[in-house]
Length: 89
Image 1 (cartoon, rainbow, N blue to C red):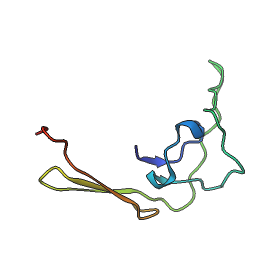
Image 2 (image 1 turned 180 degrees about the vertical axis):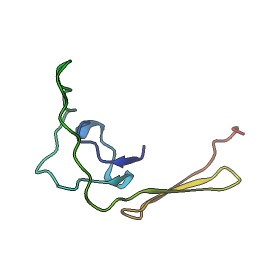
Image 3 (image 1 turned 60 degrees about the vertical axis):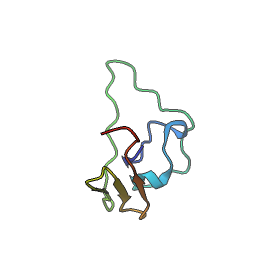
Image 4 (image 1 turned 120 degrees about the horizontal axis):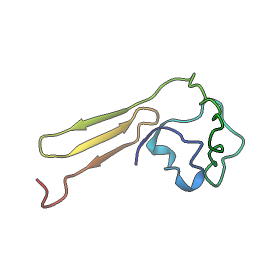
């Protein structure tokens, strides 16, 4: 799985490796929660989302006619190429 932004709500258990995340923290935390953050009680206003004020990165996806495509993370240069499954058309 590739993520545009690092998710503070998912905790370490559900966070993908950093090479698959385009934008990390603007303000690095001292530590990351182990478990997902519990949502606020129903009817209570959730806190505002953090504002992104750093450089914005993106994924570049290149596709070929034979079904092969490559995803590149512009933040760290990591790329991964995916080939079509055998038997799919």
